Amino acid sequence: MKLSLDYNTSKYTINAYDTAAITVNNERYSGSIVVTPERLLDSWEPTQIEHVDASHIELLVSLDPEIILLGTGTSLCFPHPSISAIALQLGIGFEIMDTGSACRTFNVLAAEGRNIAAALMISS
Image (cartoon, rainbow, N blue to C red; front, side, top):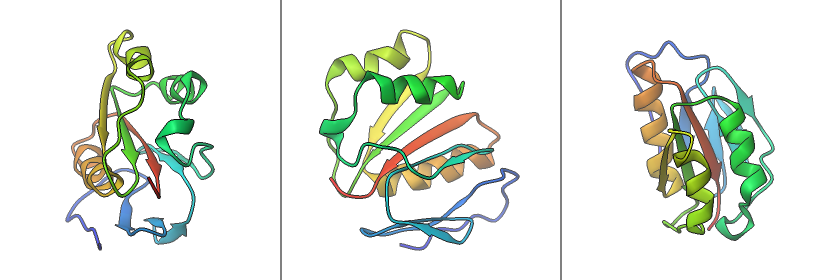
């Protein structure tokens, strides 16, 4: 699916997503990534929701976002509730959705100037 925005001041924009890759600033990434409006981590370790643990969420929290989006691949899958609790206890919003939805949501919120971190997995 091709994504586009009319106006976005963030350094990073997600251009497209499909089941094989995520395209950010016209560069394709075939593995899990983390993207914020100002930063891209091109090798986020977990590839499936079952692999996400507290250390992965702590990395996202260290980016100091107001909202964390967790894209779980082609289908919506929920992590153990203790994973979400790490961010929520610190007052950070934590939203779980399929990766396509997370990509679209990231672009909208980044365009609004929101401080957001999207952790995106390709497959579920």
